[in-house]
Length: 84
Image (cartoon, rainbow, N blue to C red; front, side, top):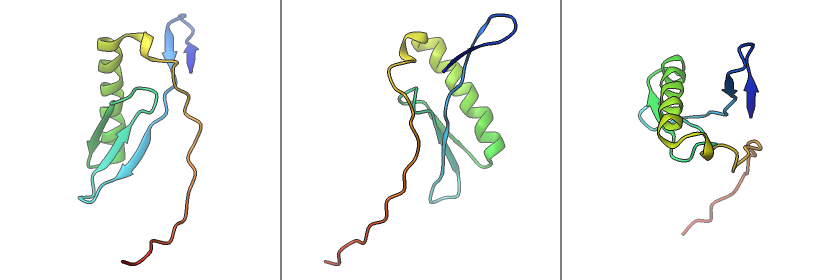
């Protein structure tokens, strides 16, 4: 989503998906920026790193990459795995 601040600069509002891996690290990814992800030991540290990763991503790829995908939300699915 494109927003504008009071100086008329473009501000992007990006979604961040946060998961915890098997080693206890938090992993953050930005669905609107394919391949933009990072990890950290705390959520606060993770968000700083995600911001930096998104800014670098946009610096390299440009604004043309934004807008092709829209994050809708998260749904939960319960399944019962069959035994072999």
